[in-house]
Image (tube, rainbow, N blue to C red; front, top):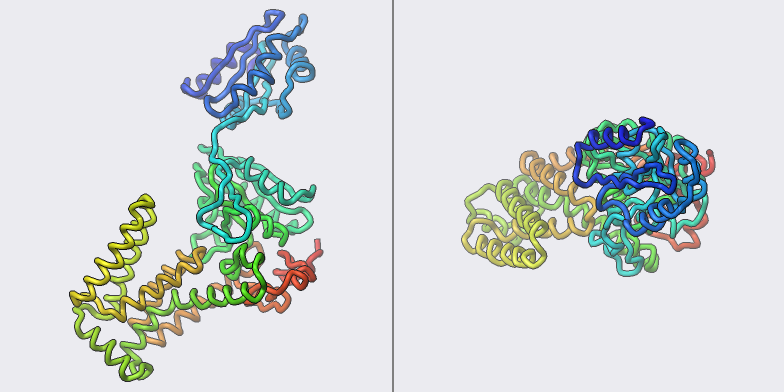
Length: 484
């Protein structure tokens, strides 16, 4: 920076290319000295800026102080803002001003002052539509990172809760916050995740999903991911108590959780609000639905084409008659129905809610019923795909993986029969058991098997039993819960 205020103003206007939202408010103090305040339009609270910065400066008697002396006098005696940071470079000025701070510059001083007067507009706290619960909090994360941090702090009031902020994205300069409990998360996991975040060479970070490939152990986009995601503060706080680490990205309500296990896709907040026996029934239904959604169409094709003896005679005759009256081979028919279903699902998801119901009615009545009556598709085939589709919604967190694997098992069953289903199942199982994130195996506690950690998998025990064992990341790694 320069000592001259005019040179600093000129340099900043050149660096921002005279952008219309970069504002400069020049002030003349009581002794005639010049100063300026830099802000970004729409990012600062104008009322707070006027009360805590502009009015005190214009009404204060600064005597004959100039340059560095005037700068220090304003900090110690005039400004009433609670958040003040001294900065020394133009890049910091731009970053702070575009984050909602007001930057104060004084003529004759090569330093500037970032003052916290943030006041940008953001969506209010509301219940997340993707994670609805019957009994539980109605609060969900918003797009503002600072608001999300406050939602977590309200639930965990301990000095052990740590927030670490950093900037990622060479162009977007997006604020990213890593949150963890210092006495729960392992030092090695925190250090490794911190290094991965700092090593991100992405230019623009507009959503939390952008970071997932950089956080995976393999560094690739794989079918299953060891990075969880949630929009609920209570869910994140529960994971933090187990030693997990959360990653908050400014501008998105989805918070990442590491490490994430396969069995956690079948857990929900309601499981811990209801009685253990009811939670166990719901979880078993979810596991069954998952396997039906993945395997049912493929097994149906394999049995009809290669193993008809497994069907009762009357049932197989009805299926065979339905297939003989359709023009397409069975595997192609299933793929066509699955394609049509995915098209309807995507269109219903992207259209406005008012039109989404109309798409469902057209898909169910017009396309389905008319296609069966016209002899284009068979009723048993349509039913197999429909059952698989309905079951896939029971575990929404695994829907992308279910879709990919369902197609894979359709091809395996259509080409090799039950042998193809079994072979592909072994390959998928080996792949899932070999995957790990931050030293924790993705299939824990199923493989490697841990009897203690099975207390909250298929069956959830009561809170008195669960509280007897502190399940955190180190226990999932097989070590002592308090090793570090």
